[in-house]
Length: 142
Length: 142
DNA sequence: TATTGTTATACTCTATAACTATA
DNA sequence: TATAGTTATAGAGTATAACAATA
Image 1 (tube, chains in turn green, red, purple, brown):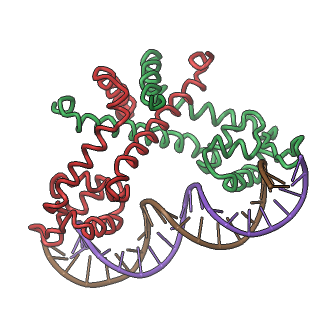
Image 2 (tube, protein in one colour; image 1 turned 180 degrees about the vertical axis):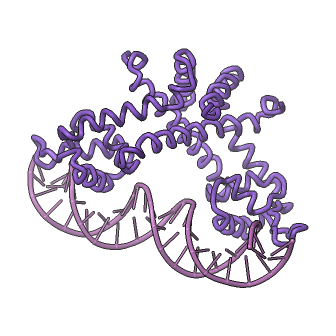
């Protein structure tokens, strides 16, 4: 096929594969979360709360605005999965799993990981190679 | 590191790399398009018009609703890059590059491909390997 | 009746700005 | 003065629904 001989097509093909790969990862996440009855955005936050995290730090990790985290925390709290624990600095609220939230977070993490196409479709060595190649693509401009 | 020994972490790491790779691809696209002064969504449509394409078919290729294509076509037409050419089936409008649009589309395609991190960071053999691995991840459920 | 494209509207997601309370 | 979190609002991006023309 002409793809590899034509740099424009090769670049487009590979870019498309990466973007479609990400869409597949997102779809897998949504499918794995769905049985839990939790919105995807809320679930993404929940997974990051393996240990207590300040709301500001969570915003950084989610790459979103602080104000958006308020809504996510409200949702998690209403579901009884977390509580807001005031920190040593009394401005800070540490989002902390409740006894009810802990097993749900862990089960969710397991469900997402085990159904991941990356795990089901690739061998261990393939996964190492893929991680290496993607890291190279993501390497600083240099 | 513990990553490879812990399946949950390994899955998360790899999923994260794929998603970040896609973000990088999108950012590269945005950066390459920016000097052309064309919105990203419009540019994405423009690149698909190497040959005349019916609006409905373009919606399929962009994975968006038909109604959204109307706005993209309006933008491209106002910029003088395309015209709507009524097809044999007179309901159909083929979006067709104008003489002014052709060199711009081609220059855009070139700019996007040549600046792609996939091309600048990976060797030819690495690109083949990456394409193969991503295709495997994307393979039908099977 | 079904389909193409258009129009007007609604919805989802997320950010911005202004505010309160701590520091 | 600066920062954590909250609240209310606004905006970007896209879909939904109803419609006209054509098949």
